[in-house]
Image (cartoon, rainbow, N blue to C red; front, side):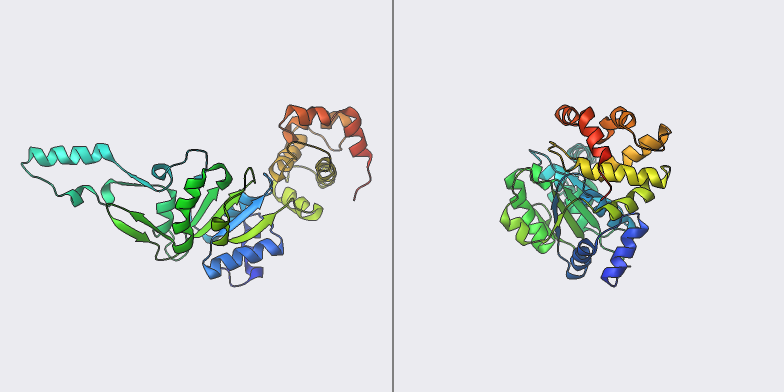
Length: 296
């Protein structure tokens, strides 16, 4: 059942342990009600991908995920024909003295559906809710692939030469994400609702960590989140995201840490930072300074 309001959307996501701010919940609600794709842009690790998973779980449907990369083609994203099975069917027909019509080799039995095509077809397990399609890190795909997506985003349909046009009876919730490794073309953005996602505020991130890393004591969670927020303020190549903050709290709890100190931070800093230059920047004096700052 679709959420009936913005508050219902917030509650639906919260039941999946995704604590959205009102602005994000509003644009998700509008995407569902207006049947428009949603384009999420922001730094890695702020919860863009997790939002799509939470919506799929909340609606009771399987998340269809298309991971973008340079060189992504239609065969990987939309469909391809199962040529070995087609050839086998052709040889069996010839053995029986038959000559199958071309259309008999190009039907659903031989069609390998990829995420884009599957999202346009009804979900037999959840026929009354829209499919949820995540087009993840679209900024990593080539510009020609962006152009190919325009038909899907604008009309919820694709053209397959051997079959014709496949159009969704119930438009899916399409969520495209970008980490801004390059600018995405304006034509794609115009077909979507847009939301910039930044790092959450302290209280919301504490709420997330409390739900996802309950093994860490509340006092340790607060100290860890305060430290992470200060750490994001220094010049880093890649600031720690929400997932890293959750993993760090779990790691600290696993090691039996009950209160942050310089040694425990240094021992576990690789959970937060994933680049050698960033580890070098967060040296001993910097850690001591960040720990000494008063809580905001």
